[in-house]
Image: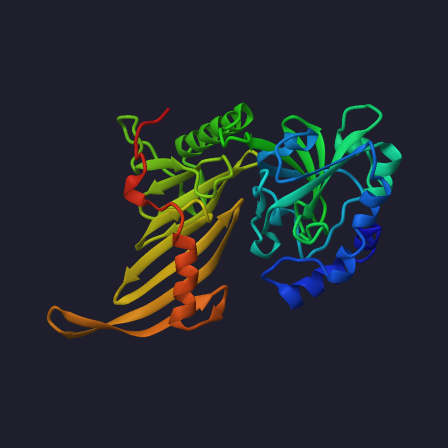
Length: 372
């Protein structure tokens, strides 16, 4: 019933979510109330429930998944939430937690102590549940496909999220997940956190694309990514590092501009560049700290980078006033969090939350100039 209502009123729900709870990324309460009915009606031998346990068919979804594309017909679409708001993001599913880290921050969410409810759906049930064409999802021909709902074990209700609450298992390395449309995700880490062969193969493709872009002196926004010298080496040092934890390394080039490039769907794209600054990476939060200063004007920006999206989440700017030789003071300090002016304490709370994870400084990367 929930999917039918959701399909009929996607734009209204998105507008309500944006205006009423833009940071939480939640659906309206009127939608979440009825989703348990389908599972209740089908409770029995074909349904399996687990709260925090690691056994059963539902454990096939444990691990980390990267969203690679939207898929299927009958999808839900809104101009307010384009496909790129999901693609390149990740969904981590474990026995004790589930977390969506998506390019559009308010769509992201997490749940501790989830409960997984599984049933098998045949073609007719799949259509009734999702208003989508079974075959267009590329499911293997057969009588049924595994479908898993994620519930909040504390409340017993379905996890009220824009992503990750409804999952269909396509095969061991791919799942289909419902967001504002249907998305295909591939496994990049197993349950133990080890990279999969699929993820490593995709990363090799990214490295090859970066090398080709540098050799070809590809330009993005009027700047060459890199160029080779007569000795065959690159003029500007470069390094690879996965800054957002989605299994694909980014390319960082230290040249006239300190630039960061990412790889998605066969293309190299620029994420960030800074002329006068440096970077500190917080991959657990998918955030890059950009520290810049020029002519007594200084700024630090905490930029959330997921997929091909780079959005400033926290910002501090100030001027330096020189009092006497060797003495100065900061003045005109301004603080912002998610585009809104805030006080120093609120800004510092945001910074503390970001910096509690792993930090990697620019000089810690494995820099090289060799061409391969």
